[in-house]
Amino acid sequence: MKDEVTYRGLTFVPYITREEIDARIKEMGAQITADAAGKMPLFLCVLNGAFPFASELFMNFEGNAEIAFVRLQSYEGTSTTGNVKELLGLNTDIDGRHVIIVEDIVDTGNTIHRLISDLKTKNPASIKVATLLFKPEALQLPVKPDYVGFEIPQKFIIGFGLDLDGLARNLNDIYVIKGTD
Ligand code: IMP
Ligand code: MG
Image (cartoon, rainbow, N blue to C red; front, side, top):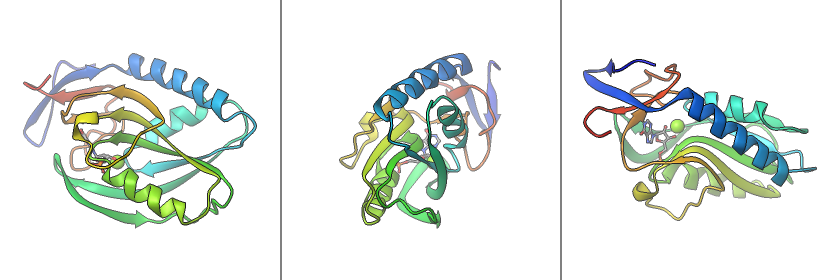
């Protein structure tokens, strides 16, 4: 872990370590394994940010499961545009499936809310949401994630999939803007 990292002139300091992330994802995997026993869930990874989390969560699920991907985007720089674009649609049939949406972070709730309403029209057996991070204070829509890795205050973070304009996703730890930590 580095003391500080800089992207686009913004300095970030460590916030959540990779060890803490890994330990929490193991717990979430065990919980989902217990809840989804015998159901063969479909993990639905929301690209791009959720891919490291989805990978680890999926590998910590024991039992039969599948994974699929959708690509959505609502952020520009460090703030939400409030306008969710579906960039790469779902081409897996979810009729009768137990879907577990896997997100990196639920912030305003716009992305998840939009995705859930889209998915509901495709007749799944159930929809659950697993998110690595959740900013409850930022929530603007009635969304309640079923599995939350870490609840955090309204701060901008990067790393482990989370980006600043496409960069910093490959940081192993999660960092927060310096001065807001
Ligand atoms: P929402 O639609 O406002 O809930 O935002 C969800 C999306 O915004 C996430 O999937 C992230 O891509 C992005 N996002 C929200 N907060 C942060 C953050 O602190 N850092 C990086 N990306 C974020
Ligand atoms: Mg995202």
